[in-house]
Image (cartoon, rainbow, N blue to C red; front, top):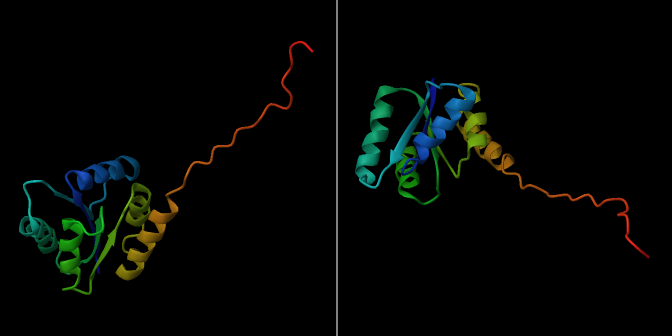
Length: 142
C-alpha cells in the first residue's frame, strides 16, 4: 500500500518546511503541505485534507503536525480515529521530516509514526560551548 505524508500547521508552517525539505532532499511526490491559514476553520482544513485523501485513495497516511492541541492536530486526529491506515505525529522538525520522508513505503505506517517521533527527538541537540583556556598567558611585569 502506498504511503503519503501530509504536513500541516499554522499559517505557512507546512509549505515552509516542505520547501526546506525539497531544497535538502529533493522533490517528494508523496509529501503534501496543508497550511492552516487565518481564513480557515476546522471544516475548511478538513476539506483540504479530504482533497488529498481522495486523490490518494487506498494510501496509508502519516499526518505530521506542528503543534499538539492546535486545530491542524485536532482535525488530523479526528480523521485518524476514522481510519486505521492514518497516523498522526505532532511537534515535527526538519530533521525528523527528512528522515521520515526517506523511509516512506519501507515500514508499516505505525512504525513510520514511531520512527518520525524518534528522528525528531534525536535531531534536537543543544550546542555545548567548550572554551579552551590558554595554557599560560604571558604576564607583564612582576
